Image 1 (cartoon, rainbow, N blue to C red):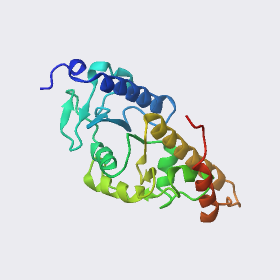
Image 2: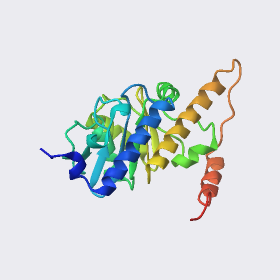
Image 3: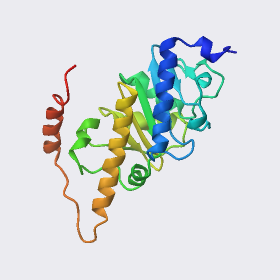
Length: 223
């Protein structure tokens, strides 16, 4: 229907697909997903490139490029897009995201079954916009899940999905991935701290977090 995917896509889409596959493989190598769980997307103009459904990331090739328009209509490739496409498209429709990473990271998923919001165990919660919320459970791939996710993402760049995993977004694949990794690390930290018998971890206050948010505005290198 779309012809040869490698010929149909623009050079910038081909480069973005290569970066997307690299990021998807990284989620596996760094233990954030198992098998074909989780998914990654990146927006190039009006095209959203996404990992296809049920294909191991180590088997993806340049000709496997899979892309949809903002309404979900396939415009590149012949492989079926990820079943979590509604979540990805909802993020792009409501934020300035250029990339989205969804994982089934074990510590984050465990935390999603225990609380409605990740306790303020570390100041890096500020890098995600504030205390990380948990979106109520809904069946994967549904509009209901996408709607629950959007509520949890309000003024945030990441959230937990109850009994499911994580989703984060950013202005690049690297930023979206780094936020996912940071969220998983904070969840692991909280689980570790709460596992000490007879002790409860010290948590930050909202005021302390606000101070960090202010400092982060000037963090990093100017290019």
